[in-house]
Length: 280
Image (cartoon, rainbow, N blue to C red; front, side):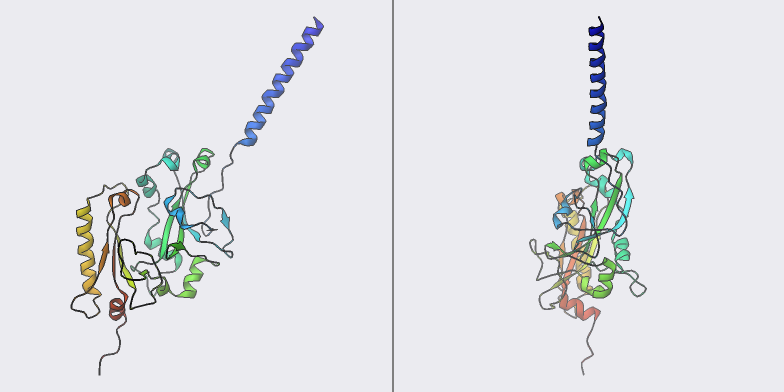
């Protein structure tokens, strides 16, 4: 009887130990929540992140090579759910504060001299959310990063974004295509060649988060009307001003790309904004 009693005792003890060990093991493997991002933190990631919901890259010192800097942070409501399963409209609605005005203000592209800059720049805004694992661990943050696009890549910086703007001058960040734009030639470069470059003079949203695509003919008509007016404004003294319009597709609209973009030849633009001395 005593032997049987000891046997039950050791079985109970072993079972208890297994339960405790299992609890400790489960606790040890739980994914810890990542601290919320901080305004002004820098990250190093490629342009492919633009089409992602989350990014694995951690914060790095802004004095080392990096491609992004956080200019806005916010919080998500518990009902938002895992970010990867949220609709593009829901993600856009959560980042409405990440507009061109706030981006320009953070970057010092606006100042007492140019308080209301409307000219598009090569600076873009990337919105990033927690991973699904991070969401499950309790992360509820959302952030927007300022990134500088040159060609088909993001520009590597080794200083704070606003300091880089101050050093380079605001005109350095104007958005130009290397030659006449077309469906495959919309890369953004510095405006350095008036004979070949076309400059973007307008990038206007045609609809907010949650709005339905109004149809190809509708967005084309609205874009053409807008760009034709700007073409006349920046005609460089020409009787037949040139302009180019780019409008969103239905797929792009659903993904949040809802801008009407207007470009004119850099030579035309320069003649209007910086006219030369009058002829003798």
